[in-house]
Amino acid sequence: MTTTTAATLANVVAAPPSGRPKAVLFDHHDYASSVILRGRPVPWDNATAYAAFFAQAQGLLRPDAALLDLNRLYGHLTAGNTGLETAMAARSRTGYALRTLLGDDDVNRAVLDFVTAFAKTARQPVVLRIPSPMEWLIGTHHFSGADDTSGLDADNAENASMYVSDWLRAFAGLPIAGLLLDNRTPAGSRRNVTVSLEAYTPISNLAVNYRWTLGQLDDDQVNLHGETAVGAYIPSRFWLEREVELPAGDFYLSSIPSAASPEGVLARLETLG
Image (tube, rainbow, N blue to C red; front, side, top):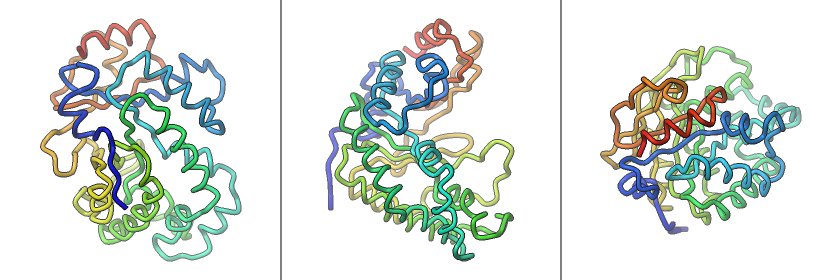
């Protein structure tokens, strides 16, 4: 099934809807939770309430796209789900746990309902962020009974990408502008194996078919499949200190820390144009 979308992330980067010289995507989860929710829980169980919370943050920051992190949603939906954990640990075969996770009907239904409500109410082009197949494989590998992930390689990651691409088909009918695979090394971890975006052929083929811009978040930059534009990360210190300069890049992605003050954030937003 081929679907169209009003905008793609590549189009957003080429002509930022905000009018800024360079497009900006924000991960404002921590900041918005602090400033808007003020200690109240994130309304993950109510997609309408979450969309309203998210839209309020978007209105304050005026990013060029709506960046929805599905890894956080998965964390909420699977927390304490012992039945799912038992099913993921039923086989020791590499990738079995990830395939089981992505094949769970109840979780999939909840995720699709949530993303559908979000995508159909978002006022900006929607960009989904998920773990890269390698990072998702690493994150679920302990269910196989092996804590050591050093044996995982690019072939395992490519196999995992088939599970992820099958799972992504559920979003075919939604107005999605882009998909970002988060391949950054988690804090306190070491990179076991480097996997390029080109290794994930099943996902790139699906993205082309659905007209989604596909990208990968690596430790040093953001790469878009088939595009020359390269994204840079605005450091957290940028939102806390006036003297921090913007890095070189064709577009920006930034996580705003919860410690940032609203006044300081608004002042720094002015420097983005």
